Amino acid sequence: MTLQNVRLFEQVNTVQQQWEYTFDSIVIQFWFTMGQGRILRSNQRLSHLLGVKAWLVGRSVTELLPGKNSPYKICPYCEGLAGEGDDPDPWLQGYFLSSTPRLPIQADANWGRCTS
Image (cartoon, rainbow, N blue to C red):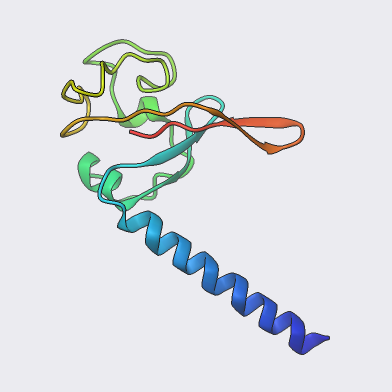
């Protein structure tokens, strides 16, 4: 039984590393937020565009994207304030794509997703 647990742990660890590598390899900035705009996961491209080398998980979008370009409450992308997909992104380089569906992660909680 212990050997099976070790193998299962190794498999889960390998899949997790592959997922993280894939996520960080995406060439567009990408992040997931929850509730009040706290970042749950982000990729390296977002850190690069923001010029931030520190860990972004747990930080708020308002802390990372000052409201200088347009006032917003939690996240300019989630609130639809960043323009249309063909417009230049007002906070980050290039153009943006924002997706804000509700994702049922747990039976008692809905987590939002916002990508830029």
